[in-house]
Length: 366
View 1: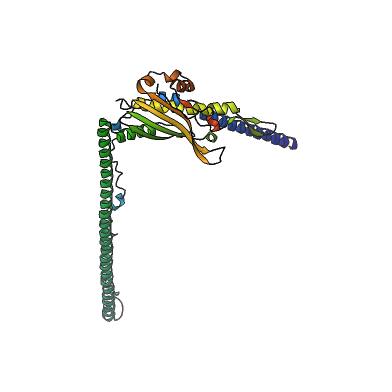
View 2 (view 1 turned 90 degrees about the horizontal axis):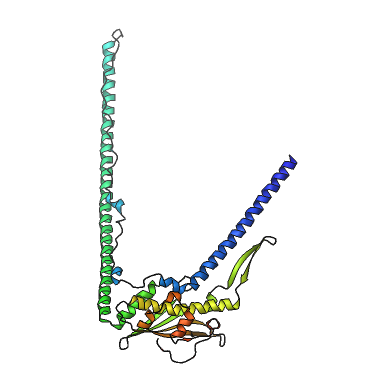
């Protein structure tokens, strides 16, 4: 038995160790998959937008007030009537019977009749009093129910009024939103600067960047030149992970990580900068089907602590310009973003990861 117990213990320990190793390996696989997903999204910033149509049909933004169901259905049910209160049964007189052969029967019969009558009268009095109490209880319960019913009706009226007011507010908000949308559509038809800037903001809001690489937009439109100025702020270099991968060492029972090379980290961040610039230009031109925007001047940068001064500063990594017709001829699915920016005559930082800004100078539009 001792040998069997020891063998069973050894078997269970082995299974537990195997389960632990499997769990650690699964943890490593999950971490590596998460890293692969993050890096895939960053490396595919430009490709991701080429798969979708960036045009926004403003009519699709028209809203209809959505009203929830009235949530006080409990008040719509009348207060149930009280449980019935029954009168006690009316007493019945029962004449006493004195046996015929009893001595002094007549006298005893008379006395018994008198006692029975008195007892009957007493029971009748108690019955009348009980009936009076039952009447009083019925009146009390009825009054109590009537009071509760009045309170219910008052609460129902208040709840319905509040519900109607909330519905009216939602309808008013929807009408206001649609009125603003009508105004935007009309102004966009006239090509006003405010309308174009608002439309570009909608397009930018629809541009889904990875959660770990958010991008902020600012846009201004010059109607005299039909040029849109775009300013994009991307995360600083330290926002991107630098881990190459994870591994589990069974002998030490540890999960360790290896770091990417400095070149790989720099190249990935530079690639994200270049892709962001081209992606923003592409999205705006593709969404502007009427051709209201003829040229785009874009800047891509970040807000970070300067390694030289230790102060928070804005660093511009890319300043590029593009004309609609020439840019729309590009096949962005087959380009090298850095080469495309060079083709556009853009000013590009030589080391965005090191927070090196672009050199001052003009940017031609290709």
